[in-house]
Length: 240
Ligand code: F6R
Image 1 (cartoon, rainbow, N blue to C red):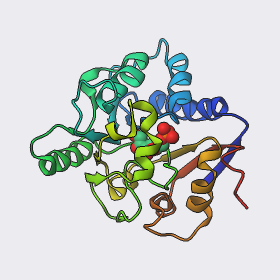
Image 2: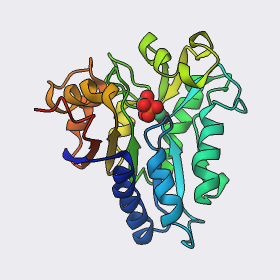
Image 3: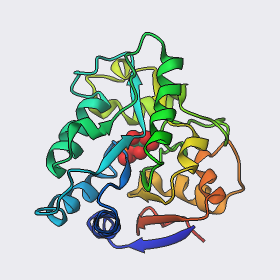
C-alpha cells in the first residue's frame, strides 16, 4: 500500500476528495464505494465543494454496510446516514445509491443480491474505507475470511462501544450488520483507507506492519494491488 501521512483530517479529505473528483472527471458514470462513521466526513465536505457545478447525474454509489435490527428510516441507519451525508450534499441521484438491505426478511438473499448489484454495475472504481479500533474494515470483524462475500456479521463488544456515541446507550447499538465481505471489498479497483486520531494508532500499525492475519481484517489490504492509506500524524504515531 502507498502510505501518506498528513497533518490533519482536513488534509486527508482534500487528497481523497481530489482523487474522487478526478475519477468522476475521467468517468462520469464512476462507481463509488462509500463508508459511514466519522472518518469519511472530511472527504464528503471536500467533495461537496469540489463537485459543485460538476454533472454527477450518472455517478453510482454502494455503501459498505448496514445495521441489522433497526429500521431503514431510523436516524442512525446507514441508509439514513448515506442519504444525508453523501447523496443529498453531493447531489447524487438517490436511485443510483445503494445500501445493503438490513431489514430484509431473507438477509442471505439480500446479501447475494447486493454482491450481484455491485458486479452488474461493473464493479466499484474507488472504495473509501475507515478502520475500526479492532482492525475491522466494513463490519468484517476479527476472524473474517479474506475471501468473504457480503453477509451478516456479529459486531464485537468493542465496535458496539465505539459506536455507542451515535445511540442513547451501548445497549441500543445493533448486534449485527450486513456488510460487504473482505473478498467483495478487495474487488474494488482502488482502495482508499483513512484513519485519524489516537484511538486508531494501534489498529493502523497492526494493519500496515503486522503479519497478514484474519485477526486484523484490515491486513487484507495487502492483497490488493492498488491501495492508498491516508492517515493523520496522530494515527501514524505507532508506525515504525
Ligand atoms: C463504516 C464502516 C466501518 C467504519 C469504522 C470506523 O461504513 O464500515 O468500518 O469505517 O468502524 O468508524 P469511524 O470512522 O466512525 O471511526
